[in-house]
Length: 487
Image 1 (cartoon, rainbow, N blue to C red):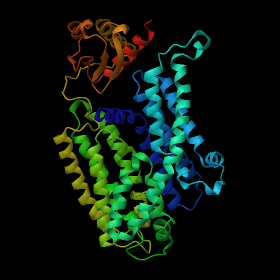
Image 2 (image 1 turned 120 degrees about the vertical axis):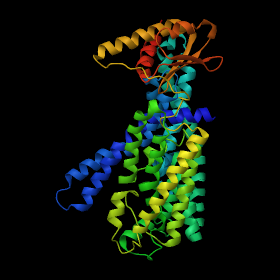
Image 3 (image 1 turned 30 degrees about the horizontal axis):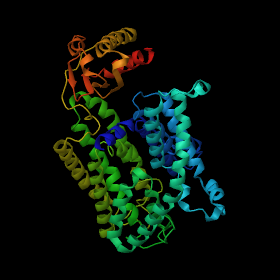
Image 4 (image 1 turned 90 degrees about the vertical axis):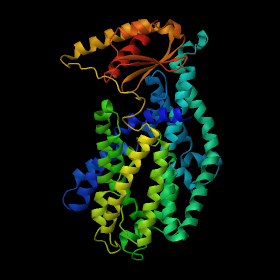
């Protein structure tokens, strides 16, 4: 199960890498919109560009998970993930639910207003990947031969997601309604309730159900309306805004510090690659308050860290609510909204949130660093690379020469593996080829070592790792091409 979650985490890296740019575009757009009263076409342009990506997060995850969780990393898997997502979200949109249940649109449970969420995207990706791995090589009778193999998978995915939709149709409103009731209950617990809300808000991010809690505390579902009242100035100083204030120390300071801890604990040979991701997502969290890119970068790779993050978020909201330090946001708890809300009438000692944030930055950094090293957690820059390898020094002279060298190495490795008949799957991490082999006795490990790779490691009866170095991606692609072209 843990291995499965780690593979899921790695699969999310592809869509996650797109998100920081979108977050910054939206952040700058909102900043321009708030400070300038002139022609705001540029602000609208930037916001629309960023929102196009962030609002499609669920679709990106459906496609990314579908590709990442399949053995072949094939485009047909991505298409299947998209098909699965489109089927379930279309079947369960409010209008369709009203038709299915033969009720008026106004009677449809509010849970279905948010059916296009990350959880549904990941679910569609996982189901389509499982179907691809199982049925992508199936041959149908001659009359249906056109739909054999990869073409069969999107069809099966669509049918499967229809069945899943029936289950979700009845389960989703129950879970959603329970969370709304739970949120209403803890809203009466003062600062403790704010802390519990912060904890469950982060804990529910992977499922998309955090919106159920947000509706209770941020909007006028249970009479709290924290966002609206704070910005309108209708409320009690030190009380209104308590369900927003505690997020600022986490998003502006805590999570960027966590990103720094992950960078400092990354393997030497992977540190440069990890830095490019972690710096981008850390800045996005600080400047705009968009934390999903950073959170999804480690929540599945290292679930224990994400649980700690949820606990610390709850603690932050509890502390801010206890001392009645308040600030608010309309977009998210980043620098932009903090600055905009600083001088509002209901902002109470907002500068203390900076002090609290600096303390939380220290806590996040040292706690994350300790847990990563102590538990050997596979955060970005550490996954599947337990041993440091010699980095192969290569000149990047002409791209054709580089490709030829990798192809030559791949051809030799492919032959020594026993070719297609002896290979079940080809994958790679930051420095290694990861292969599933049918018969290990047919593998010539000495021959593979003579190709120039630093080492070969047999992990289990059917799993082999070939240590290539930082150019492993090019070798893996050449190897996959040989496998696909082998008849």
